[in-house]
Length: 80
Image: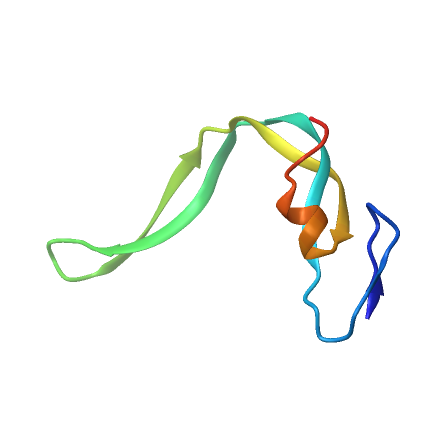
């Protein structure tokens, strides 16, 4: 049992809560040198550690989310 954070209704027991993204913001991820480490065998059979760069980029980050009842979650996002 929980209270829906969108409509304020009390939801019956054993009803699953759904996380709904209420707002999001743009995020820029920086370039990271040697961020990914992996191991690969050389032709001689020796295991060698290799590192690759993470290029970074632009994406979205969740700014605020709410627990919602299935009815409110089915109506879709209301903002952003």
